[in-house]
Amino acid sequence: MTTVDVALGARSYPIHIGPGLLDEPSRWRDAIGGHHVLVVSNATVAPLYLARIEAALGGLQHASVVLPDGEQHKTFDHVARVLDALAGLGASRDATVVALGGGVIGDLAGFAAACWMRGIAFVQVPTTLLAMVDSSVGGKTGVNLPAGKNLVGAFHQPRAVVIDTATLDTLPPREYLAGLAEVVKYGAIGDAAFFTWLEDHAGALLAREPAAVIRAIAESCRYKAGVVARDEREDGERALLNFGHTFGHAIESEAGYGTFLHGEAVGIGMLLAARLSADLDRAPAADADRLERLLERLGLPTHVPADLDAEALLARMRLDKKAVSGHLRLILWRALGAADIVGGVADEAILDVLRRGRTTG
Image 1 (cartoon, one colour):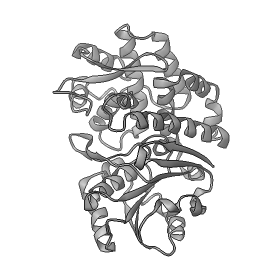
Image 2: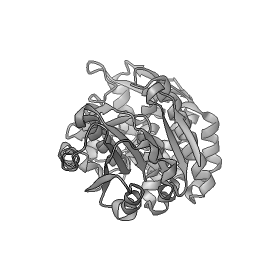
Image 3: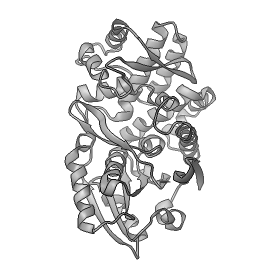
Image 4: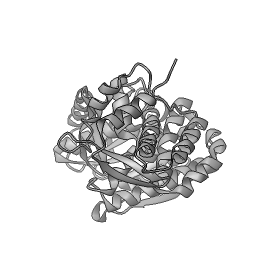
């Protein structure tokens, strides 16, 4: 087992990474306090892993709530179901919520934990690659609105993150590939050597070779843990982790939740940000070409659908949480491994890259 620590003083927590951790509760059960535990999962993951989590909770009073699967279900209605389940359990201030599933479950269950009695403990047990390397780490929780993704939420750090890499064996290929987009992001914004390693090991990652997968997850978590420790509430550096997300969230929302997986949209968004950086003479176009080649090799989409209107996407982007008084701030790069927060980019430059980035035919 590999452990990466998120250093946040009294709220520090470990990220445990390795195969078979669901069957080794001795490695993580100490993160659960009190006698009440609610496991939150979805209809896809629960049949596979819920019984193993429940077996690890012997001696505790526990219950589970199983929600529908999919981004379109990350809503207040389903937060209410989790809160009702906590009430039915009689959960007190020392209760724990266990989020078993992908990023939607982690975000939603974490938000419910942040709301119940003004905040109780929760443990992240991500079962998708994207959640393992991104949403399970750092304490961002939230729900979607029709107007945009994650517009309502809270910072609420987990007590632990338990990454059982064996759960990736049951992950559908499309979801696995979407997770690789977030892995690529860490090399793109902060570690050019890791980006090169990804280029060299793309075949091993596509084949899900355990050593390559574990290293990719550990390197991604290590990078994000360092950023979160320095900027927990996204006052500065942490915003760089949103490289590609302002474009990507707009694509997800405008296309309709469920049309694109989050990682797919982020992959397109990263390439749009890289192309815009080149247009503004901030970065070499050759670096954007490298990014496009890697994304394509990993089987990820690289173009905006032709039926998505550029003006509508820009309107969605203005709702991004990094915007200030309606003015966009974008994450652009200077080169592979070096990103910045940039304001004042002209609308026409953004519209141009959105139009050129669309599929044809």
